[in-house]
Image 1: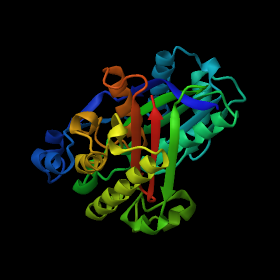
Image 2: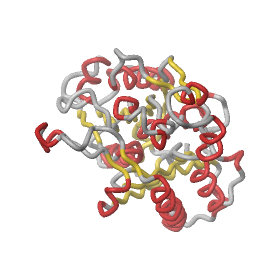
Image 3: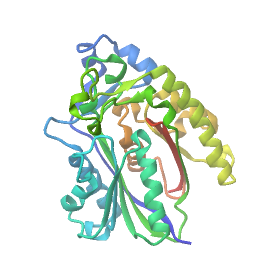
Length: 323
């Protein structure tokens, strides 16, 4: 059976770091308040001249180097983002040109908010399993700072910019064992950017293209939904809670992440957490965390990883991976 296996990982963070102390000078908040409620101490913010494809390209190149491959080896590019360069062409198409991938490769973006990277893994895995592609770049990249209201203390303290990438390739060895994706559009008012281009500029009055979130309600739904997702993933693979070696969660909030680890029966030391240093980087958060733990030696080959995410839509999903 053909499977898709992670051959390499890569990530990129902008140089500028905004600490909680700096945010104290911008909005009515405190370092203690942010840390206690979210676990975030700082976040990286893109330079004014950096766009999504800049971050994505840097992460992709590092993933290719880690995989000991070149652009010529890639025939599928999937970019998960809520902050693309353009309405069209897709950021993925721009990366085909920027990376020097041969014309004719498959390339497209996925919009599933914070769940986007897991959605991207699922899609790329299906291409590889059905021989539609041999090697894929799956990238989560965000310049989320561009859609933040820096006067809204309930949202601006949470998010940051960054990119993460993996190279998937066809393999007879175990790799992605299963993926589980879901969505529910009934909860859209709880987390959204309340304006889009199809509404027309004349309808912009009274709204704006910035993140709007009812945090407490999102928190309650996320904890409940991710708990059920853990059960679904383990059951589908005939596994017990103790069989998972590492939880690599979406880095939204340390309390949500810890609740999911408890559901798995995992100690905090077996959960990859980068939220303190990166904040919530939306679709980039899981590949950023994965690359961090691979490169510092925590995650080793043949270990069992559970990736899970919850995002606006609502969307949610998991991927069980034999790394």
